[in-house]
Structure formats: structure tokens, C-alpha cells
Length: 119
Image (cartoon, rainbow, N blue to C red; front, side, top):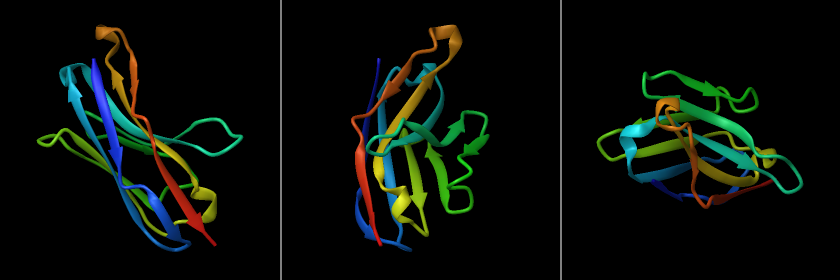
């Protein structure tokens, strides 16, 4: 099992910045990628950014160039630096950890941290 705890959400004005953190614990050797998803009211959950163990990263087109994902393996923590925030970035942000297929391929989720961007 893997446990994920997010922090860092809050209220910010458009153009501002926030940094989200996600602390992971448990059977972390099974994890091959960690990432951030978000879900706005009335919308489906969508990928924001992901970082694989090999260092590869991926971003949603809507955040590329504004958001940066990073992992501190020593602290078992993944971060999402969000700059130039827009009102459309308002959502609940969830941390995700993906288990390698060889271990079952399960996805683990945190409880989420809210981000509200005012115009």
C-alpha cells in the first residue's frame, strides 16, 4: 500500500504562484511514476503533470510552460510549482502514484488539496 498526503493548496489571485507538495509513504519501491491530477466542479479528473522514475515528465497542454513537476526521492515527495495561475486552474488537485505493472499496476490517490484562483 502507498499513502499520499497533499498540501499547499489555497486561494491566490490570477498571475500568482503556489507550490503543492505530496508526501508518499508505504511500499514505494513499486511506484514507477508520480503525478498531479485535477478536477474542477462538473468536470472529469484530468492529468496535470507526471514524472516517471527515469526522469521523463509530461504536462497537460494547458499548463505547459507555467507548471513544473519535480520529485525529491530522498524525501519521497513530489512537488508541483504553479506559476502564472489563471482562474481556469481552479480545481481540487490530487496526487497520484502509479504502481508498476509487474506489481499489479494499481493507482494510489491522495485526498486532494483545493486551489482557487481569483480573477
